[in-house]
Length: 324
Image 1 (cartoon, helix red, strand yellow):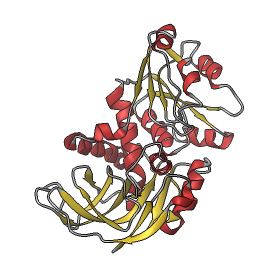
Image 2: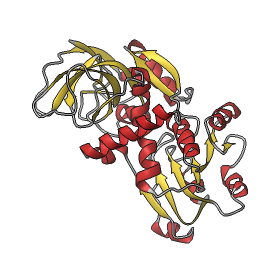
Image 3: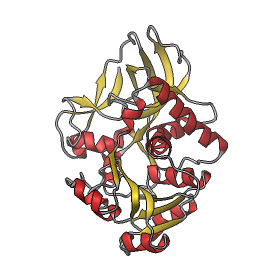
């Protein structure tokens, strides 16, 4: 038996509850993993509220780190006793232990703690694909990154600095802006005090940025289009403020033949080899010191409701880890 967080209907944090569930044995292509720490991400909120619908009842959580207890037939990249971490479908990571598909579970280097592993997988591989698999960024490129003091944002600030990319961040307070700057952002705009569009234009000599990376969604989308130079790219990868309203293709034409994509990490992770390569790239950044994982706050599993409330009210900085 293992504790697991489930929902039986969509709604607020109070809809989550902890139940005891049978764990069982892994079948072909599966592993059983006992978790040491779990990650908390906005996708968990989207699934809890029904923005990303699940078949109910359903367990929640997309990211964790722990020790492999058993492997099923055909699993060759992991063995019992291995340290491992993942960001993977299906949801169900908020638990003590689970049986799950093995393909997207990755060996975790000894130099990276379980808490760091639980904090880095989803957010780190998100930054990896944003910087290397959507748009060919090069040293000297200028990028606008919203929510630069969040978990993904602080990793993006460090990743950009390590590769000579000029990252202009936005955040909701002077304290958060300072944090983003400390982690490698070239500039950070307090969007509560300043309209970020003219600030970006000022910082780029009127030219705008080549790419916007936006996990905020509704509140920042329209302004972001005005920050992009002709032929540039708008990457929408999240909806923290709500889903983006429909946009006309003619708007993209009128603003300079812009490109627009709405990405999701799990498309990139679906291929086993690519997933493993992405994880190795993230781990190499951590092991080299180019990226330091900031676990801003931790909550025990029993306080998962409080953890969701803190995330949704933007009271968190860096990554949030659920301890077991």
